[in-house]
Image (tube, rainbow, N blue to C red; front, side, top):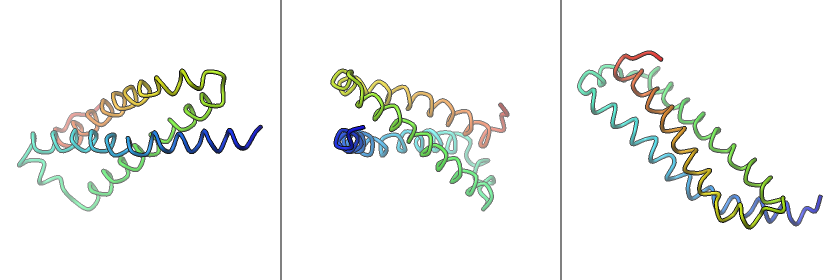
Length: 117
């Protein structure tokens, strides 16, 4: 394997994905805050050290899941479809936000509205 291509692909992936991580986290945070304030003041009583640590753990897991995009991105860039992939990788970002947003919504509903899924 040519390490120049791998380095170039990894650098390009970092340049694409890391600025978008801020958007990803902002969307997920907005969903959590929406359900928190929607259930307020009852949700205020749920704020404990344990619940805060639970939400922190879920945020860390969401960011670990975000890193899965690097595997797909670098693999696609090392293929003959590199230029096509680079034009349409935003689709993976959009799908990732939709999936993560759906999971975040379910967790937020379970935490703040007492639903269990």
